[in-house]
Length: 205
Image (cartoon, rainbow, N blue to C red; front, side, top):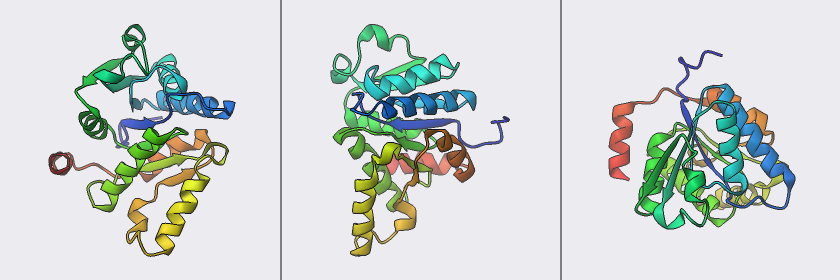
């Protein structure tokens, strides 16, 4: 596949630092990671080497792809080990979560959310909020493995129905059930990025 003509060069993946109860979660992470590597798309993620985070990074690197970890210093020994972090293609250690999230946004052309916990939820909700405020138009995806995100999508529908999400067409990520369909959907949805405009957006965030 010729990826040079596509505006998707990197995807930020939000996901849990734990494996979860369902083996399908790890399998989906591995499938996504392989698909990214096959299409020459870099992984931008939270730097953890455990759970689903570790699975997607391992799959990307095993396929010859690039895994870019961005992690606050205080999490280095909680979600990873310093030795394991040294295996990543790139590692950026930030002062805090705020700096981490801005760097992840800046380095990413799209966002995918695999199953995870409160931190995973908080990260994608913030990206959705920035989209609602007109700060970006990057593709967003809920990888709805085994219906994991169904309760959240029901809540979003409820919020929209009650009149609290006035730009639902900007806010709602694509909901994709099969991990192998995520990368093709993002590449199809991508729009050319305005680099100068995006730099200005980041400054205003």
